[in-house]
Image (cartoon, rainbow, N blue to C red):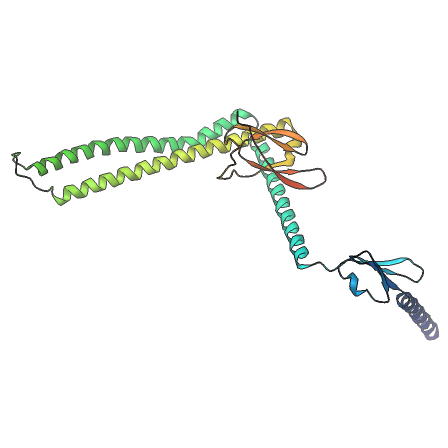
Length: 278
């Protein structure tokens, strides 16, 4: 039994040594071949120095290619490759994010009218705040008018005779300052509320257009709308209906926005939604 195991072990070792010998012989007989940047073919037992920036092939004694050795990239090439990888990652993230948004959009709304209802529901509290501030502004305007009249009374003199004048009491001046400050605060708040209302309207309009596009043309899922930028090119009219060319197809979109278009081969690039000025 022991002899049998020892014989098997020796046979296995001989096989390993034989394989190593074959591999060594192949490697020892290999040469390296390349075509340098000047078009000259170089051959040597080691990779030729002149071929540091081109592909080198390791060739067996029989002429078969054993291995292809890619050139070491330059710092500029490394930077470009890294930028390409980052762009692809960002594109993939944008595509995945848009896919989630589209799924949520389709799951949340079953008809176009529902967007209008949801929009109005979101706007209603802001409208109420604006109306409340407007009522308060009317009261403040009335109070400021009364304070101005009272100040004029002091400036003209309590007796009302010419030549006698005085300054209004500090408490009156303080009340006037507080009233004007409150007026400015409320007016600023209303401007902010109005802007918020416009933003909500724009958002629901974009979502509704996207929903309609997904429902009527499933291929539009290849286009991912991005948030509108603050500065828009002069050839675009923000807020107007426009078109964008994605992979040779024309899609309706919100003019002034940028979209990421995904082709069938996986390549992604940005397109602008534009409308020509007349």
